[in-house]
Image 1: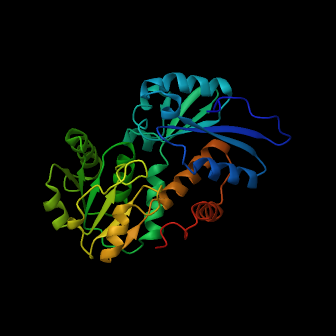
Image 2: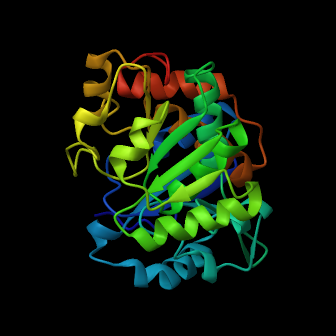
Image 3: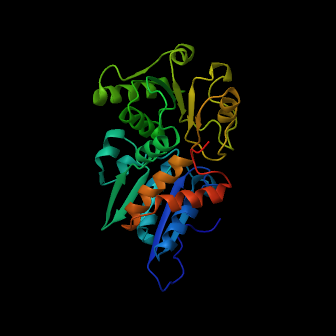
Length: 300
């Protein structure tokens, strides 16, 4: 693969280097979204994929990758699975939201400092508001309690979900997230350790924050038999835009939300942090839709 830390060609217009660190990210549309929006602002924005899989590296390589990005003059980095929590101890400071969530998806590199932010939370919230503006919010089930899950859970409770039931393949991680949410939102607002059948029986909606359903990990994160037409179903996966879970839910008549909205609106926030410029969300939505050849995210 090309060296993601190589110096960009000399340009007459302002040059900004940014990148994405994660596993299996070759299909990510984030680079294209940032570079296109940068061009609209008259910037030569070069956005690099720093793919752990392609480089034969693990999460333990994060310290070296951050050092190399700083040395190469990167303005910032997006952080994705499986690094959103592992990167936290490597940073000099955190935004209030990133500190509360214990997860970072955006690192600004400036003046020798590494500052962690989380634009996943606002990104999911904006996508939910636009794509499912009037769904019931009483009881919601969330699958996955990792870095993205922490951000989505925060967004759901801030959006007005009455009670969130969290499931994760690592039960301790779900319990820890639920406890952290209860400390901020109240004892009745989050729980873990409830059987899936019980959780779904009283739910009005569900969100998948696991990687199950991605092109590289096909399938559904829960048995389709647990779905019913009155349930709304949301994904944070956008590759593919229609996962097996969403396809099954739509066939039953459920209202659904794909992961495109979160993908775009987290990028909106990250672009603002990297460049200091105000992005155009409508333009970025239109560009994303053109890239995936689909209606604007959340429009289904």
